[in-house]
Each structure stands twice: as C-alpha cells, then as structure tokens.
Image (cartoon, rainbow, N blue to C red):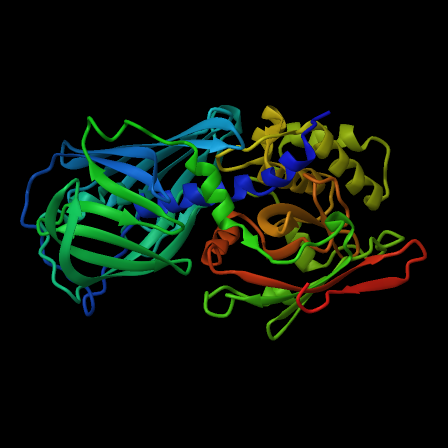
Length: 512
C-alpha cells in the first residue's frame, strides 16, 4: 500500500500539475513553430547574416533563483541545418531533489522550415519521447518507445519551424519598433497548436552581466500570459521572460551550468496557490461551497465548465454542490457525448492489452458499474506511490512505474475506467487545504451522470472544495495557465451533510 504523511499529501496534491505547466511553458518559449507570415502585417526582411553555425547558452531563473540552463547548437547538415538543444532543470520537490532534462533534435531546411524533430523529457522516474516528420500538409508523430510506441497525424496549414532555431531566425534580421511577426506555436508535449502575434514594442537599453546593450523588446501573449523577449541590434537573443517569475538570460559555456538552486521549485508551487483569508473546517467533508471569484473575466478563460454539473456560476458567485452517486446503475447507458470518453487517447491507452487485462483482474466478477468504479479507484489509490513526477503522464507508464502525483493517478484511473466500458475524463482545477487552493487533477466517470473521483485522496464523489476548471486531455489542461497568478477567491459560506441527510449551511460571520 502506498502511504504518505497527511500534511505532505496535501502539499503534494497539485505539485505535478504546476511543474508540468512549467515544462510546457519552457517548451512554448523555446519550441516555437512559425507559420506562414501574413504579408500585410509582418516583417519579411531577409537576415543580413549568412552564418550557419551558432552555439548559445541560457541560464534559467525561477523567481530570481537559478534553477537550470539551456544549450542550443545550430549547424549545417548538407543543404539543411541541424538544431540540437538541451534544457536542464534542478527542482526541490517537497524536500526531494529532482533533475529534469529535455533534449531536442530537429532538421530544418535552408528557410527554417521544419522537416523532422525529436523531443525527450527525462525526470529520472519516467521518460517521455515524441518525434515527428513533416510531409506536405501533415505531421506524422510517434510517442513512446518500443512496444508502447503510438502514432498520430496532425494536419498542417502551412510550413513550420522549430523554436530552438529562434536565434537563427532573428540573427541579422533588421528590426523596427512596430514590426509584427505571426507564429503558430506547436507544443510537442500536448500535440496542440497555438497561434500568437509577436510585436516589437520598444527599443531601449538593458544591462546584462554588468554591460549595457541597446535592445529591442518583443512581446506576445500565450494562454493569457505575457512573454517578453529582448534582442540586441544584431538580432541575438539576450533575455526571455515567462510568467510566475520564469526568466532565461544569455550566458556562456562556463557560467550556464553552475550554481543551480533547486529550492526554487517549492517557491513556484506555493506561488501558484490561491490563498484565502478564512479557514474551511473539515474540508474533506464539505458538501457545499460558495465563493466570490475574481480574475476570470479578464483572462480569456472559457467559463462554461463553471456552469456544468455540480457547479453554478452567477456573476462573481460560484457554488459547488457535492453530487450523489445514483443508487442504481443507469439503464439507458451513455449517450453519444459520453461515449466519446470511451475512446483511447495518446496518453490514455485504454485499448492496450496489458492495461485491459489489468483492469479485468482488478474488477474480477463485479458487474455493477458503481462498484466497478469504486474498485478501480481504490486500486489506484492503494498501489500508486505518491510522489511528484515532472513529465508528461500516460497511463501505461504509470501502470509500469507505479509512481506519480495527481496527474498520474488521474490518467491511470481514467484509462482503467474506459478499459471496462465506463466513460471517463480527466479534470483539472483547484482543491482546498490549509487556507489555500492548490491546482490538482482528478477524474470524472459516467455512472448515469458525471461523478467526480479522486484517486489521490480516495474520494468518490469528491468533496465540494474540488473546483473543476477544465476537463479533457493535456491540450485542454494547458489552458489553465491563463489563470495562474490571476485567480482570486473569497469564501462566502460552506456546509456539510449530517447523518440524517439534512443539509446544514455554515454562514461565515463578517470579519471572522
């Protein structure tokens, strides 16, 4: 049985979600894919430099503490050019040292159009690999290795180029304030596209390592978060700033790998939490919660899910009602919408023979879907070691490694449920503990209605402090980055079910 200290578990809840977003943001900053540029709004000036070899180093800081570095090489490969990049992050996850490595290799043609790439993320516990090759109007993608390799096809509307070649794209390019560049961002970790517009907003002077440089400031927004780049007059990248204090600074071979401070990982997790000024007593037993919400309306975030199922949003007031598991299994079965959540996905391999067989063994002779769902949840809770894993979660890997955070618990339970014919979907939102709401992942299963299930906390249904913000795959979960650092909550009231099922609401007095 996987055991974990209660207080430690609370702080563990969403560590993987937040740190996974950190990985994705690094990929977005460093793995930008360029679409065809709009001739009416974008700058098409050709680079002045014909130099085809570059070797760049960047130091990575998180809230002012150095947590990693990147090394990028661009070199000739016949008529093409080869991009090789590695990123190393050193993080302290609840007192445990964790080093994550990302490596990228890509081949681009002479015009920086992507031909093929490979990305590997290695956290020391699990290894994520994705590769792709471009063929005219589509990209063929492979994820995983050996017998667990999966294929996927992504339609393309124009040529792409990988963002590790960003310094080569801008080097020698004449810039002016007001110039605009249109890009399509392709994140290989979630296999999704994101179109952005990068603007040259200013020309100023910045100090780097004690030396002043005339620089151009370039700015864009991704998922509601502002990303800023500074390039010198030769188009050389000197500094990048993401969100939540993530910064990359130009360096050299000697300085870049030195003095990494892994303790910043915990700071990032704490900074992503949403604090409230009033405590919720017996949070795991709460069946009703009412909150005043701010920071959603200006984020560009889709609010529809806050008015689905057990959640109600009216103006700036959000109510969550804990649902009841139906006393009898549904006789009608799932409809077309729910059946869509029976299909396997790239990280939910519910049709894999090994996973299907494991699900059957766990369930045994049980037939009632409510009992089946509870049995599967209990098995994941008992058998998956609760530890943060910085990687892209998939069900087969979790089944093999038997370790992970809330991401891994949610993806495995979702796959096991689908494997036995129960529609299921991943959910990401926030959950309360210790006067804060932490980002967290769990599962919903269709049992005549959508029922929340948390394999990390062994809850079905979950308590009402589980606030769902999105449901779906990794591409949907990435949208939550728009809220980080912006979401604000005030507790209005909350309540519990008593033994006789009468409902008692706890009204919080003003000024308490």
